[in-house]
Length: 345
Ligand SMILES: C[S@@+](CC[C@H](N)C(=O)[O-])C[C@H]1O[C@@H](n2cnc3c(N)ncnc32)[C@H](O)[C@@H]1O
Image 1 (tube, helix red, strand yellow):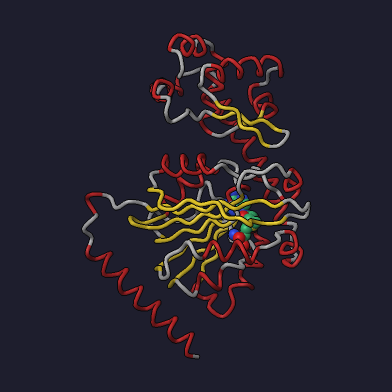
Image 2 (cartoon, rainbow, N blue to C red; image 1 turned 180 degrees about the vertical axis):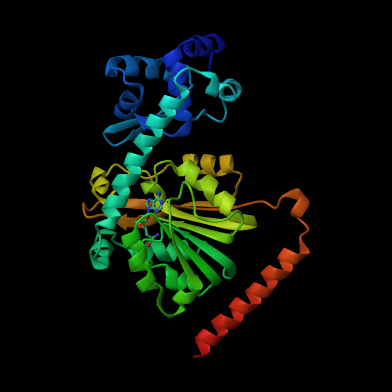
């Protein structure tokens, strides 16, 4: 448990307060911090160490990289309270605007790298070859979604290989991706039912989707590419209507740095951090699992999958919404009829 005096000593410094403010937006590595704060490495490392020792930031090892983030241990109420108190007054600190602008530029550079990677993959077969065992993880992903939905939002749809199966269980699918090339490939994959699919170019951290527009969200093998996964999960929550479901399939924590060549920013996730982000966004975690075998990479490493489902709880004022319930029931009936038609063809 943290020590109140140590926390206050750690906070009594302008650079450390600036650092805390930055790390509340996104995990950063030392090079990114140096670039944003324009200070030398030894100075930055010393300040980060003091913050870490006080329990105000945590270190996150990503292969040979170390990222720092302001994510208190949920058990440590003292740190959580202090950080919460300070966060209301961060705007008043010196250099706020300049720090934030350089921070956004650093995050945009990460996004740009991912976009360039996927934009350069014009050949869907090449991509399929690189994401070995895709059929396996897509099957796992589908098993996590309800059988019938009104509107499914497919986050990071990629070349759209999940779309035919998603269209078979929803009236409408919204396929979002940051890469225009991937969306072009996805259009081709959607097949005959593609007219019920909307393709939207955009980032998972600023979804091009209205509040409550979807009743199910799929995040299949995308969060490890996203600059700040917790922000993407908060956006998924916003995009879902009350009672809506989120399904996540991603890589479990691993050490295979070769996957960085496939634009992987994060080397998988710990179940505990995914659960924490889901709860922070307001989801009820319904299911969490680790699936083995996961995927075999080009390096012959076997990486496990983690799967999660979360539910956006009904808001008390709307929990008795007979209109929405009737709409859901009608939509389930339509989907059931459609699936019956498909199977009797
Ligand atoms: C590995 S592919 C996954 C494709 C698909 N979900 C599947 O499982 O078949 C990851 C996709 O996510 C997209 N992506 C990565 N980061 C993104 C972001 N921040 N916002 C939107 N799309 C993103 C990439 O462009 C790429 O098409």
